[in-house]
Image (cartoon, rainbow, N blue to C red; front, side):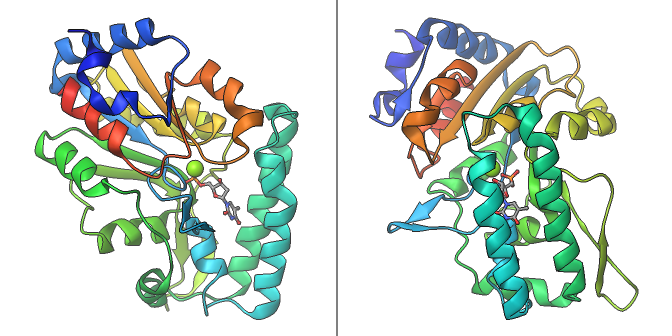
Length: 291
Ligand code: TMP
Ligand code: MG
């Protein structure tokens, strides 16, 4: 039977594909190569986490801090203003990535400087994550456990805040040894107070540079020529650019917001587009099939 007929979840109303035949070839080719040749590269915010729950938006890793008691009311208001200014630009389908790039650097830089001013303490992060409304997508346990069981490396590549997202995964009990994170990590001084962010800034549209700077990671898993990539932004499509001798890449994109305006561009770039789907059902079913 044809792969797409065997994966029941692929007939869900939320699933869209531009080229099902090409997708079937990728699925067959990855399946034939076996789980030892596979790695998974996933974005975090709004890809592994839910976009909305009961009609309300869920927080990103930055929002976990924005909404917390660690931040003064004035700073909270400033961060909200920045979000209201720059998020519409991030998802604007009428502007090119080149046009958005400097504006994204501007957004992230302003936010990180504001966070640094707040003298956030490392030991407060556990409580702040516990008190937040951040929710991993339905079926996340199966996703993380399956990859762990088969020893398939999972790279979480996020323009969010590394310390926060790692804590989210830790509290969910799925920070397994096969999980590696590239993100913006906080740099604390010797008394545990935030003084800066480490390394090169990662924002939504420079993940390619981040991938190429971290070649060491990809060298360690260089026998894994097949990639399953999960994202929710067009900027996530370059997350696998550090993989050498890439054989097959299967790209799954969550289309959460501005669905009608962005659907065609998502269909043109992702092999599978999941429209307003808050679950991991499709990635899970595909993993079951190919491994
Ligand atoms: P991601 O790479 O894990 O998806 O994280 C990037 C998301 O973070 C991006 O969609 C925008 C969001 N974001 C906020 O919600 N608040 C902020 O202050 C910033 C800078 C980004
Ligand atoms: Mg995202």
